[in-house]
Image (cartoon, rainbow, N blue to C red; front, side):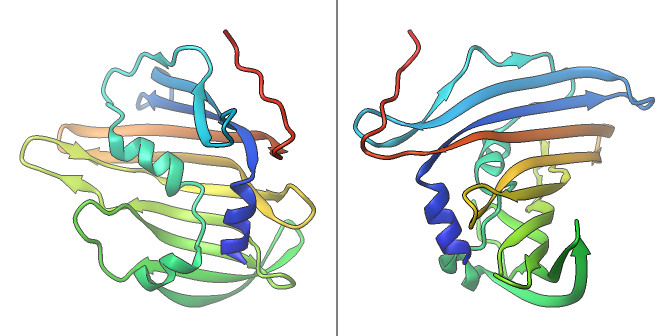
Amino acid sequence: METETQQARGHYTYRQTVTVEELSDRGAMVGQYHEVRDVIFSPAAERTEVMIGAPLETLKNLKLTDEDFADIRNIQPFVLVDELLSLYETKPRGDEKIDDVDCWVLQVKPRQILSGQRLFDGMLWIKKDDFAIIRSEGQAVPQLHTAKEENLFPRFTTVREPVDGKHWFPVFTYADDTLAFRTGLQRIRLQIRYSNYKRFSADSTIQFAK
């Protein structure tokens, strides 16, 4: 089901809005990163991304890394496709109802993490009637520590909704977590919105802004 969902989502354009906020001990925002990208198809029908305007960046203590942006693309909207199954151990964790939907809860944990890999460690909520994943909660792993710097990642929740009457696509990711850097604690709030899903066809016309 997940492989089919991933293949279906690959035929859709959508807008991805990312906001990362640094918060003080009292919860006030002290810095922010904000960007909007359209995931579209080129005139040659190749999948691509277009940044809408320039990103806003006023972060003071945090620095977004290649791993952060890779997680935004691949881990926060996590899809457990067939080719990833060998990378993970899975364990059933009972039943739960989410928004009046009967679900199985499945724990997903990496078997091992090789150098350079970014994987998901957390829980999935799977609809009992059609096996669609409608919610995920967890963290991108591993946390990265070196002698000179640290790259830490928050726990997050991603919510999916039905888009085409059959497939459940990510619509919202959020995180509100405190990261324990050697230099001190830093609270971070992350929001990713996936909106304006539209199915692409070869007959579609895409107009690029000048």
